[in-house]
Amino acid sequence: MKKKFLLCGVVLVVCICAAFIYYVQSVPSGNTLESREELLDDAVSKGEGWTIVKEIKIDDCIVSAAYSTDHKATIAIFRSTSNGNYKFSTSLNRSNNDIIIGGAMINGQWYDLIWYNGAQTKYAEITYSISGKEDKILKYDTSDGGIIYIRNNEKEYNLSVCYYDSEGNKYE
Image 1 (cartoon, rainbow, N blue to C red):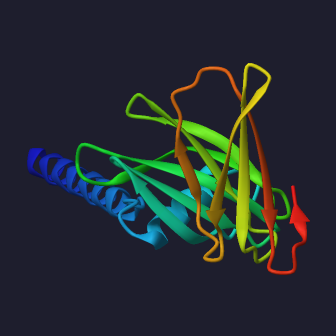
Image 2: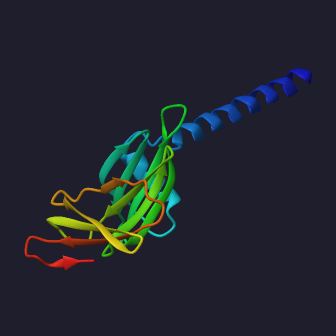
Image 3: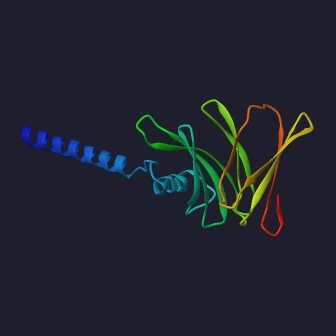
């Protein structure tokens, strides 16, 4: 009788270990574009069927630009973990036709993040105003649809963004 209980106990422990191993293996690691898309599907409540189209690496973070099957767009931040994987940290979510303007603190440094998926554009003009005075206008080539990221040390400022296509049409 004691051997039956011992055998049942061993079988139970083996089953629990197998279930744990299966769970750990099934959680996306964030190491590949496809696994980060899975993490987005799980983490972002607005939008489903995410496709990552652009990525940049800033320090130990991956910044991904993606669109969903239900016409949403996002810039998502994935932070590296101690075991070399990446976990979802935060995202900026908009409609696919809106310019995403936001930012993130990465290793103690603020970055302005900008991305537009609504149309094929040629360039973007970004205007910073500090203390109510227009400080600088920056121009970026956007023909590849990339994420614009700008390291920023200012605490208080206004930021405006205009995208232009090859015909001169303005998107803001």
